[in-house]
Amino acid sequence: MGSSSSKPTAGRDAARTAAAQSLAETHAEVLTSIPLDGGSLLLARAGDEAYHAQRSTAFCYNDSGYPCAIFLPAHARDVAAIVAAVAPLKLDLAIAGGKHSAVCLPDNAIVIDLSRLVSVTPNTTERWVDVGGGAKIGAVDAALAGTGFGIVGGTHPDTGVGGSTQAGGWGWLGRQHGMAVDHWLEADVVLPSGELVVVNDTNEHKDLMRALRGGGGNFGVVTRFRFALHPVNVCDYGILVRMSPTVASATATLRAFAAHLKAAPSFAGGIAVLPCGAPVIINVVTAVGSKDVVNDNGAWIESTCKLSGPWFSPANKIVRGADFHKDLQQALVPHTPRGYTFAACYSIMELNDAMVEVLVHFTRVQIPSKKPAIMVCSGGGAIATGVPGRQTVLSHRANGWWLLIDTMAPDMEPATVAKHKQWLADLKAAIVATDASAAPSSHVIVDAKTAEYAAATTFDSATTHFLRQVKTQYDPANVFHMNHNILPLA
Image (tube, rainbow, N blue to C red; front, top):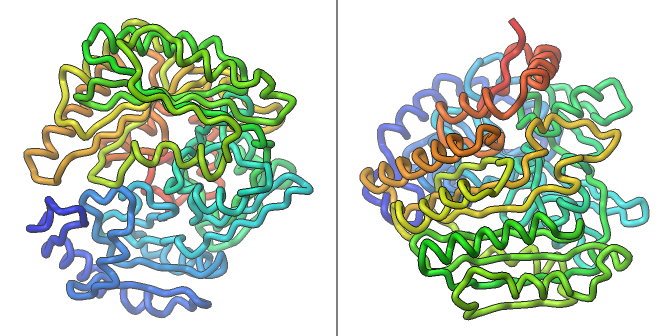
């Protein structure tokens, strides 16, 4: 990083810029000759402010990479032309969707930035919505506001639909309806050859449809998602600040939350937020669905306020009759600011006493700074079972909880980065040692080593074999490898 590394912007590294520029110049003839119909291209150049601005657009802006080229296609036809032209170059090819993470903008890669493919077209009569491959959850919420319907998956407006969905897609409707992939009905996909195909459960690409549902971008570029819609006209939620300043009180608070969610009705969901070094645990609890389903008159939300554990609750915000899109979907924004972040996700079987002890220890005792936080998200219900007839590749969905580890650092100085990465490594090791079934999610990759580990542990052996068969059929040259890479069969 350069001298700006401690500022809230991506840094400038002359050597890395020069390496990217050299690669861009080597392949400039091919890159600049691609026939784009409204799209544009930014090549790496040291003094090109447009290039540097575009490579720094990720929500998590720690050390954004230095791609040799960034394409900004206007539509799926542009994507197809780009893929067909660059695949033979055998360079790293990365796809940037919502760009919640900066890993989609790696050094020396060709990046296809889908930030112009953001259309959202709902059909409330037939209960589906078409979403562009670069759209964010916030754009979907804006388009569906006032309709009484929502999609399954997504809790933060900046999260990209593409990345989160292809990894599974957790959301407030999960325990009632499942994961986002369970309600992903159809896709437009650009294959490594540049061919644009429609993929669903009933055509010749049905195996690809299954592989896309959790396969993490290994097979092509998804330029359109079609999701089923579900009623959200009843929306109650609570944000409960639980004063738990001691290890003992924090442990008791988290245990009570775990027991409460395990016995919750299907329409209920929740997250416990454990900020490092803070004297509180924040509970976000929800009751969302149709009037026929959410019929307890707010009783479950109110019961959460009475859970044991905290010394007291200095601030409880209970909202009855909220707007799902404008209120609940914005609720986590104050707790997840933009910053220098190294993230990881795990699904775990039980939030038992041993796991509670680990999570409390790493947020109260062994902390790198007061920036990181752990979010404990509820599973169970339809998250565990899925939807009949819609096959996915989610091997560990029966695990009862999902841990999102948001390792935010105050700056990007080398000592700070090393300290926070070590904390994350120690925490991940403790999670795996405590729960043999713990499995990383496929959508958060910090570095190449993490990617290799995720590919080896995210899927069970039968699912891995299926994915490798599909990879061999659709991407035998492994064009799409900048991910938790699934290798073609030998």
